[in-house]
Image 1: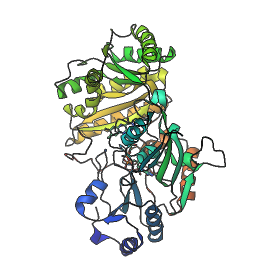
Image 2: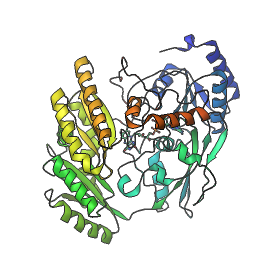
Image 3: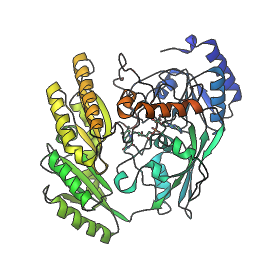
Image 4: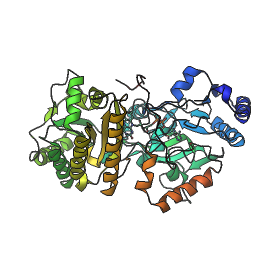
Amino acid sequence: MAGSDSLSLRAKEGLAELKNVLLGSKIETSEDKLFFEGIDHSRYFFRPDAAVFIKDAEDVGRVLKVANKYGVCVSVRGRGTGCSGGSLPHRGGWVLDLSALDDIKIDASAWVAEVGAGAVTADIDKAAGECGLFYPPDPSSHLYCSIGGNIACNAGGLRAAKYGVTRDYVLALEGYLPSGEFARGGRPLRKFSAGLNLRDLWIGSEGLLGVVTKAFLKLAKRPEKTRTYLFAPPDAKSAFGCVSAMLRAGVMPSILEFMDAQSCVCAAKYCSELSFGNGRTVLLAELDGSDEQIDSAERDMLFVASKYAPAPLIARDGAEAERLWLIRRKCSQSMYEIADSKLSQDIVLPPDKTAEFFEYFDSIGRRHGVATPTFGHAADGNYHIHAMYFGSDAASAAAARRVMDLAIEKCISLGGAVSGEHGIGILKSRYMALQHSPAELEAMRAIKRALDPNNILNPGKVLEPFDLEGVSPLKGVHLPWDK
Ligand SMILES: Cc1cc2nc3c(=O)[nH]c(=O)nc-3n(C[C@H](O)[C@H](O)[C@H](O)COP(=O)(O)OP(=O)(O)OC[C@H]3O[C@@H](n4cnc5c(N)ncnc54)[C@H](O)[C@@H]3O)c2cc1C
């Protein structure tokens, strides 16, 4: 991990020029600032040579122009909640931190939010709520993540099955191409069909093809009410059967989350307030709309679910709902009850293959002695699977890695995907050749080469396999969203 003393002369000249051209944005090279710019939720750490805290969107273009001139890598960072290492400066260089671009303006008559890339997702929804409107995509990290990161990863969330993902709400984008030139993707209009739309290329491109500085987002009418239900089917197979039957019957909860028995055991150990769910499989559902709409959907949902699970717990007010939600909120962090480290993936499964996949996942976990707790967004087949291990035990780490490799191979062979919302970053890039054909990968590389011929923007991510051998996540680091 190079310190500034070991910077090449070119990189030093680049940094000196950067200091002269920036208007308002701040360059930091102190170790404490660099630490939190070099780590994300994956907990892998790579020290950047400098971090540029963007205050003025036009400085993004200036940084990229200087980076091209001096051949310096630039890693784009929203708020660092990413799970795949997409923002990490694993080749050194500069981190471009966009978190201060956090303006939010709501146009209540057009139902549009105009937001800076660093705006926190929950703040956008809160501002929309003040006008009776609603920004539906709600990653579980919504209190901490930025809309720029959501756009770059095409983030989903709990309500995705009913309301869709980030892509469905982006009307237009502004930002900078890797060359440092300003560009707009689409326009903030209800319809736009004037040539290739950079917006569609930037969404989900994980910061490889440009830096988003501003977004225009579609808003929706805020649902009047929500009601929460906790079902405890006897096993995972019944839970998956219940989910399929609800979807076949046209019951569409705004939220339908799955937690397997291993996750529920951990959550109950971790949190003494949890008086239910221990050792069972849980489905947590939410219906939204007016009282009449909820009552009617409730009748259909309870009828379908009655074949798979006993009658659910039903929350009649916010406090009761929060009590039911506790199990879901605790399940990620509580897995460390099993072991001190985890590998996790956010796979997507075709609905008719879910039970087959999880039978296989359970069996390989047992065969290799690896605990495999799982939770996820059941209605859209997007599951967060885990392989637990002890960081200080090489054999346990290797077993977890083997289990995860086999699981990803199986998922893709069943027609699934290696990521539904977290993106590829560096941590999943070795699975890209399994997911995509050589022709598909070459088409993606050709687009990257055309837009970023000097390969300065988020290089070595997504499209190039990254070897994790010899690098491990840091232990004992507390990040703001850790509870
Ligand atoms: C507790 C927890 C729960 C989570 N739950 C969910 C969930 O339910 N659904 C979900 O989708 N994700 C979830 N995530 C993952 C994460 O929050 C999302 O991937 C989020 O979109 C990342 O936003 P960020 O601002 O933190 O981005 P970062 O981590 O800073 O960056 C992520 C990627 O986006 C790129 N990027 C960031 N900003 C820009 C920009 N302005 N222009 C171009 N590229 C940019 C980065 O280079 C990187 O490749 C969760 C994470 C945590 C920690």
